[in-house]
Image 1 (cartoon, helix red, strand yellow):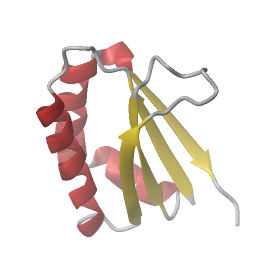
Image 2 (cartoon, one colour; image 1 turned 180 degrees about the horizontal axis):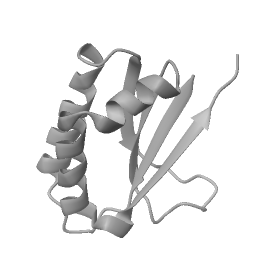
Image 3 (cartoon, one colour; image 1 turned 90 degrees about the vertical axis):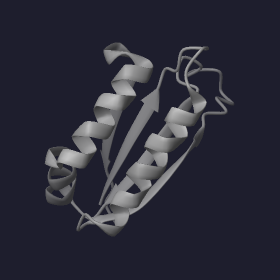
Image 4 (tube, one colour; image 1 turned 90 degrees about the horizontal axis):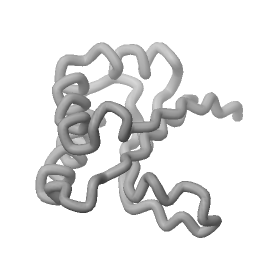
Length: 102
């Protein structure tokens, strides 16, 4: 299993409606891409005061690396990623892919 974790460094003047639109469209990919089992998003509460630069993020849960590759090359994902770059800037997105063993 792969947990695809994406953290967003949102500017204070970001378009909240656009962010929620992108999140909704990413969540809809669960019904269209094989191996994308779940999509969750929300604010980073940063309880340990270590990641305040990233006030928002999302997690996609994939069955395996092949499913993540399908997502990575999907045209809908690419278009939504571009919209996130427009919101955050290219340096405002951190991606972590954790391989989870059962």
